[in-house]
Image (tube, rainbow, N blue to C red; front, top):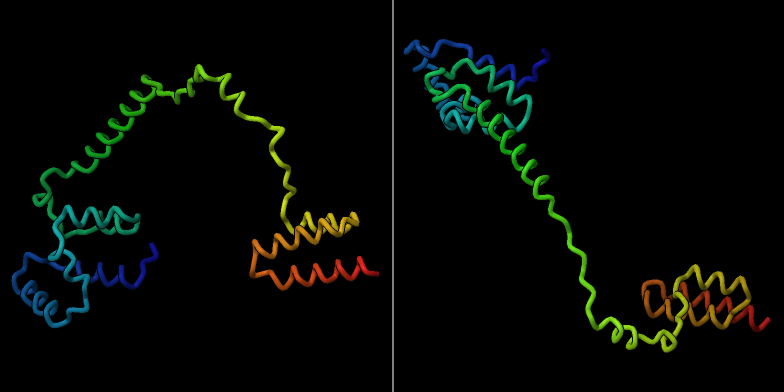
Length: 182
């Protein structure tokens, strides 16, 4: 197993007998003297459940947590508590899925109103005015087709819609005007 330096340091610092009072006193003094060894404070700062929550965030940390020799089984209320919770959550998820499938909710269709004929009478498509698209591609097509007046109108609309390209559109209008005059 290829361990990083921090992992090697962590294992080195946690491989001593903590039941020996003399070693523990030296260790505590070193922790206070060298606070930058934050790994020394790992067991002091967090209780077991917090350590487990942190460890579960990544696989390498979970392997860390599983390899800690300092945690005694007496500290854990139930060593199989985590596995039980996972099984329980899987059961809960399965039950939720089953309930969903049994109920089979659907999106209801919009009911047609009784005034459908009134709506049809109100819409008169003959009064809708056709407006050609106002895009640069459309203006280029019009220019190639020789419809210079329409192309100029499209470029004028584009210059109003896109002021940042106003100079470009003005130059295109000038080119088209030059083509018309020649």
